[in-house]
Length: 90
Image (tube, rainbow, N blue to C red; front, top):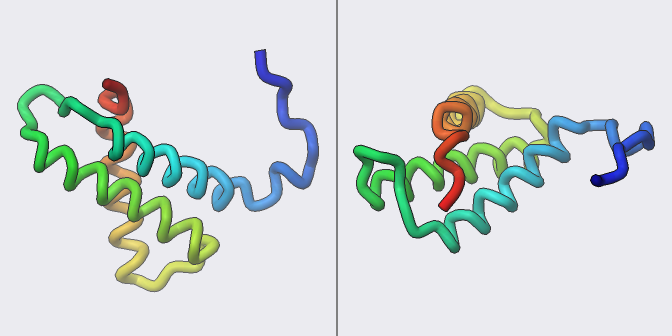
């Protein structure tokens, strides 16, 4: 079992920290993914994964300070992440 995070510094800007971690894991998943959700072809799934990864990368790089266009892109990518969370396996 992993040791819980109790360091207050680890909790500072957790939204940005987690966005960076999620983006990195999504990029790794894109590289090794060999399947897609039922009813979706591989190209469509690749596009969805790209939107998810780009959203979290944008959020992390911009430290959450997004312009209106970025907010829309990030919101869409995060919505897809939640919608397809159960499909992030192979």
